[in-house]
Image (cartoon, rainbow, N blue to C red):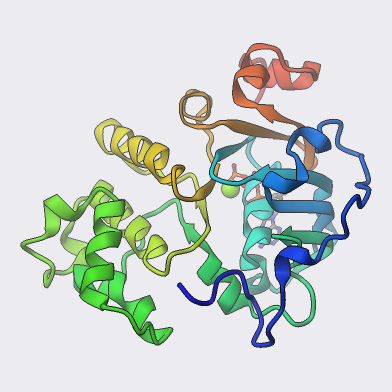
Length: 286
Ligand SMILES: Nc1ncnc2c1ncn2[C@@H]1O[C@H](COP(=O)(O)OP(=O)(O)OP(=O)(O)O)[C@@H](O)[C@H]1O
Ligand SMILES: [Mg+2]
């Protein structure tokens, strides 16, 4: 799509925003884990408060492109809060106060001239509970394209998105029927089709399979694997086996909103650096 990485109405070259050789405040031990050239999302001393509650302590991390990054940790440790910072969904939460920077391709998304709507076209989101619009299957996918004034062939794009979400074969003869009449697992894949229709670069998922049965969960997991060939996927999950199965990188948050470890999923699960991470992963708490 033509809007590329531009997040503002002004022509900007977002990818050149970071000075070469810029130093990073290395407060997370593995901040250098992802080379700068592969980085899509970068948090720099990112904090979130809800009123007096400190939900995220300064987070410093770089998330790589075209990989699946899993975000794990016990309930209330700030996983959803962190995810929602990435495409500014926390804007909708009145009490939320964000500090530091969250960079997408080098641009601080909290910079004054970033348009959150344009940002969310580049960084789509899928929620825990499938939430199709009360509209036809076709319109669920086409709606966003229409309101953004998509000038390509909408039928073609709807088909591509439904194929991309591994749903096309199941729904191609019932595109006019309500999205709400699909099964839970199909509804979630419809929501994934809706998220990929505007051709985003990043897809955020907050426990996308936790409301699904095992068969539907397996389909969504397979799909995430395929999506990572074209997209950067950042997924919150409570299910550690799922994180181990589907992700390339894992970020572990622990109580108090602290990102305590980030690295290759295999390493995190087999040989974590942090004792509390090991305790969490082996089920000693959380
Ligand atoms: N809208 C809000 N207003 C006030 N406090 C909030 C709000 N949303 C989250 N919090 C608090 O911020 C902290 C982090 O919450 P968050 O939802 O990010 O955790 P989580 O890791 O996603 O938990 P879960 O695994 O249960 O989904 C918690 O202490 C929570 O109570
Ligand atoms: Mg959550």
